[in-house]
Image 1: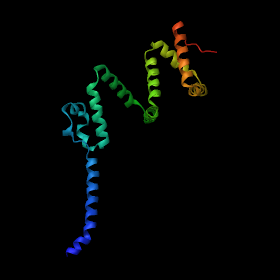
Image 2: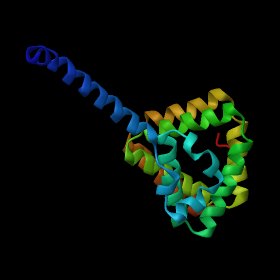
Image 3: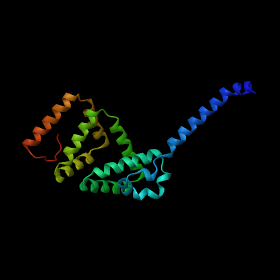
Image 4: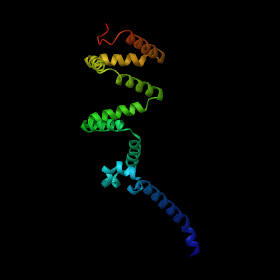
Length: 184
């Protein structure tokens, strides 16, 4: 009998090892219990309370991080987020997917390119509404081919050429206000 137990011992140990792995996998799938959230996190995440346990652990973690960011925002930032969420809910699935794809493409860029794009966005955001409107109208009046040509010219520029272009553009703007007319 003792010999039989010893011969089964490797099999028994392998089984216990596999059971241990399964339990680790199951433990990872449990997620974050609602009771482990802080009172502030529970307050922010209250709309999800009744279905919290149905969310994947990854989604629970994302929501928890979002609740943490929410608590550090100013009232103005919170209003901005609410507006963007409202606009997001109104979008079609295709529009949402296009935005997700652009975001992933942005996140894959090197940090210096991301910062350059953020700077361009800040510049645009600080333009007076009439200049924004003129720029939008100018871009929208271009054919897809013309837009692609502009993008291609930009892609082919070296970082130094881009910097020179930006500096010249800035000097030009300082000399005269934006007219919105097309260059010939």
